[in-house]
Length: 161
Image (cartoon, rainbow, N blue to C red):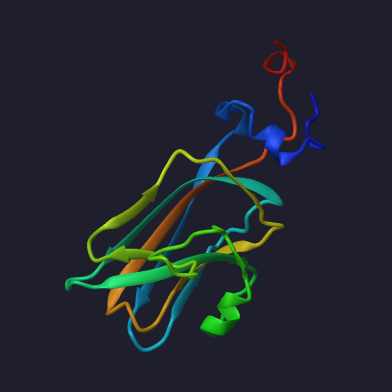
């Protein structure tokens, strides 16, 4: 059955197996306290996709904290202000009772968001990792997402009750 005209909310009610293959998107930035750093995914996301997991790790030998954001865009930004002009991948995130959308990770720890089904209208854009200046000392911030496309057809037997 063709489900390409279904709403995203209705599609998300389908079993996970309907979403097909999942693939990783990895990003890595060597950050420091002087200027923000960015990395952009090699592969563009499909028009509509689903993010299933986020894992992030900060590798640094000293006690430190890194703050980063993931946004959608077509080109590697030249500044933090330009980066902020791109659409946030994870909207509504608030940390430390602030209005910031930054995700925090401390040295040698990780952020692991698993088992969620977050729809994204990517429109062929790529994921951009931005590590904010002023917090991270010399270290490596790595982020990995697991994504899949959104099905446009499913077997009729999956829809019958």
